Length: 184
Image 1 (tube, rainbow, N blue to C red):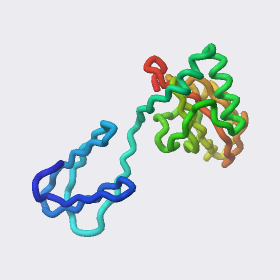
Image 2 (image 1 turned 45 degrees about the horizontal axis):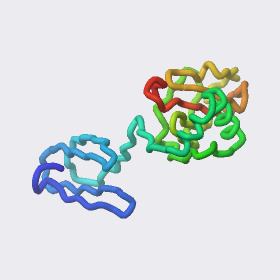
Image 3 (image 1 turned 90 degrees about the vertical axis):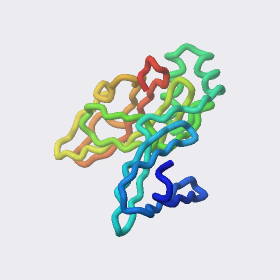
Image 4 (image 1 turned 180 degrees about the vertical axis):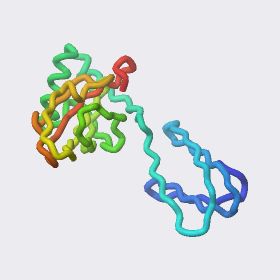
């Protein structure tokens, strides 16, 4: 919503919102998605080309996944965790897990000293897995261990290599808890 006659709006088939200001006055636009995510945008109209904004929430609520929940809860937690880890490292999808856009992965900045780019995300009910491409942008070889990637909400870490050479790349799989006490 916004002030009357301040802008026109249109939507596209893929869900984009196009806004054209009709006034030179500053105004605030309030948006809320069907999923309940809200944002306010301060608009200062100026002549020239417009701007494109991609609004990506820092944390994305997962949709209920009763099949994954039943599978995860049908066995001890450690067994489920090991099974999920083995599946993703071998390129498979754990039983009843669904794929989510990697760009919607939870905020994650471990003190490992490498650049991380999310490539794939799989979600169950209590766990979600993100595969990151890691890059050593430095000039020195970096030794890696799983504990360098730990932070609140992380349940397991798997590395494709323990040594990342200067400008080298590798993969890291991080399993996050989706439960409130897990912090993700």
